[in-house]
Amino acid sequence: MESVREQYWRYSLFVIILGLGLAIFIELTPYLGGLLGAMTLYVLLRGQMRYLTTRRRWHRGPAALLLLIEAIVCFLIPLQLVVWLFVDKIQSVTLDPQSLIEPLRHFASFIRDRSGYDLLQDANLSALVSALSRVGKDLLQGIFSFGVNILILLFVLYFMLIGGPRMENYFRGLLPFRAAVARSVLNEIYMIVRSNAIGIPLIAIIQGSIAWIGYLLFGVPGALFWGVITCFATVLPVVGAALVWVPAALYLALMHHWGAALGLTIYGVLVITQSDNVVRFALQKRMADIHPLVTILGVLIGLPLFGFMGVIFGPLLLAMFVFFVHLFKCDYLEGREPSRLFVSRQDGQSRLTRDI
Image (cartoon, rainbow, N blue to C red):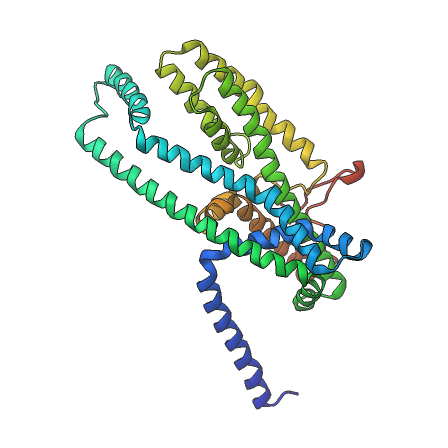
């Protein structure tokens, strides 16, 4: 039986750990995107790291550098190109404001002819200029924060790759589960991470590319830019891409391009929207079956927390939360071995999503 002194030591240590951890977390909040990005890329690259170090007998340092270069080429350079695309679009609007004002004038004329209300009155124009100024400032701050998080991501990822096995064993020992359950928990977490980190961007790229082809075919100005915007919109299943192609079709109609507007509408309904269901079904055969509600709510949670990177990390955190609730229910409330919540369909095996 513990003495009063031993209890005091134990609880004092707990309070110290909790206080220091909370202070560190608060200070690191602006850099959570980079830290979570490093963890995500580590999960994706750990298999290659194991292959290079155990099968090929590479030293961990050169192997980590090679995988760091792979991460830069395959993940970070495409992200950087997307960021520069946004910067270029902002600069073009700043240097040529008529490119934004002209469509607004057409839309205002349409509203005035139908309702008699003038959208271009002085109060509305002042509010629009103020809103655009705030958006531009926030976007530039977000781009700077994104760059800082990328540097943190690379720095942390390198050391995670160097100390991978020891790091995994250490955290496995900290998990509040039996050894067998702890291994299952880590495997489930790895599967959830892979599903979100690969599945969500891949769906976005495929559907955004399909939308981009439609924008080119029907003459939407800035087709590449709006194709990239469609990529981000697709994280919301079923209705996501419609948030972009429907306004694009309305824009073509306001510019009196009636045939292009009708063609884009038909293309959006029959091709863009349906491709979402087809691509998700095909990918779910190879990855964890994450419920669409987890994706939708996860994005809503992730964007305010992590900004741009919340598209991936929001669904990831929510999926892990759902899994831990399921684990608590099975292990502590029902006293049985926890079944797998997210089960893959690899090698043609059927998969079910349970307890959601």
